[in-house]
Image (cartoon, rainbow, N blue to C red; front, side, top):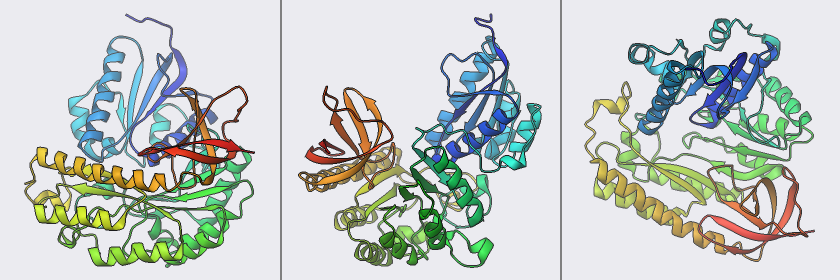
Length: 438
């Protein structure tokens, strides 16, 4: 029985997965708004007649979350709480046939490159003149900035090419115009994202053009921070480091998923690099950009990973002392090269190894944070929560990295979205505490 009146011309967009999905949802929302739809993002108890779920299909946990969300809204439809449910994104791209069979209550499934078809189903036009326009779902002072789609890398564990297709760069001039548009709306920080940033330009210009793109983006008035996410170590364009060192608004921050610290495992993963070459690259990056924060992600429990391989990775982590790190349990994904091998590391061993890696990183992070006590950093403030203003240094991205907390008091007022200089007076494993210096 319907509990409330639903707005026929309102769409509630639900986004799951990574920052690239956030970007795609924002583009979809701008198109819907231009077609005179009222648009909400992840609105609780929404009165929208239509729900669009942008799914993730990357690893088991993400797929489970996406399926549970689809089932939740299919059930809401059965109970009259929503009229139409549509599903798009990576899970839908990869498992459309199975989803259509298993969850027929959904009114339509769409792949990652089918926005025009989804809009047509909603009786909306795909407006080409709006390319680059977005309705931001992030706080208005920062935005994820996708510079390319798809991936040409042959990593054995990864299903992204199955869901996102081949690498396709967005031309530099289009990206610069998009950046200018975001800056005009008050965006101060761009977080560059792609499946592989370092491949940028090879398809369009026949050479790597990330450094040139950074030069031009750094000249956009109003953009004060630019961060690089998801770089690939093999063939890393070192001229990027020159631009990073030269331009004040390109943050000394690099997100480079390295996946493992054992040459045996890197070879099995088809990463095109050895432990020794990776170590040399990390040292070169740190020499060329002193003080850089390197974020990486690693995988535990890949098929054939021995105790010796795992110990090698642990020793390597302690040698490298990454400033930021995440670790995932290997997920056995259909249609990937690694699916041909037996998933022979037991689930409990994967879990134990992942927890051990993160415990090592916790100690490293604590030691690195203690070194920041007494120093002053430029901080961008994102939110007010639990009696603290919460922000980030140039070495941190939202949701995944460290935060800086400043106690809210009668004589301390910080406007969200502003930069402040903060002197750090204490630190724990993942947070810094300090006072504003004016």
